[in-house]
Image (cartoon, rainbow, N blue to C red; front, side):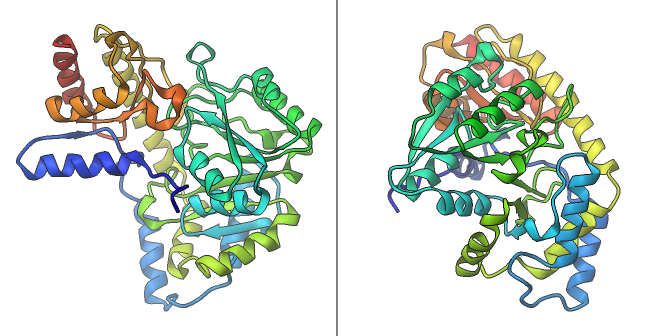
Length: 381
């Protein structure tokens, strides 16, 4: 159990709540969840399912109508052609990470993962007994994986590559050429890939690109996705994976042994999300884009801060190296002295030191308040 780490967002949230309990005002830019309500037609479908009696066990991989909807949705959106029997629905997307890594990795295996990156990748790899090998994401490369550097890190013990695009915490997105080069490496070295695409719908200037767009990659890639980010359904705890055929039965057994199945009524809501109107998603992404432009512009006007414009997700990852302070200390002081809750870049890996992660999943008014507070705070450093 000591191999497992935690998510600092929840730690910072708890500290921010403690401050608020004393009467302080805090702007929350630490949490990675849309601040929009779940669209009404999805909520209605969940309520209808409850009233219809869908409150009992269902098949472990998920109800067939939902898995068929996932399959149809992926094909309709141009992402992947895969039959429903390769889809497994889970309570949240994190189980897909756990089950994939536990199914593929043993003691002595190596797993390549992005740094900075979602901290659970490294944590789960450690838990499985494998060796996490960070792949640097560099600001000068727009926080994207450099395929040449990735290949230099491959060894005979490498088993799995973890990808995330659009990316948490940097908001970067892989290009089509990036995906083609990474796919070539995976095929050449016979490696499996876990492609975390939970932010796929939140892209701004460019269309989402994936290694699954490359012929032959579906046979060695696990697609990780879910409803939390795309449909503002974080609290519903709904995720899915699309697995290569040899992994479907073993991962289904892992689900049986851990959670049995995903709640019945929520799967009907998930189906309504995939089958229903796309306009709420478009509206949410358009609002995120306006917020992105506002926060990037505001941060770059603060002396000492340099902030690249993210291509997806809802995070900025500003460079704060000029202040000469550890990112953890800056995170703590911003919360205590400025009332701005954000995350230290170092919590996302060693390459994150010198940066902060701010989520712009908050109103433009609150973002404006945070920017003013940060400007005043930084002027006194």
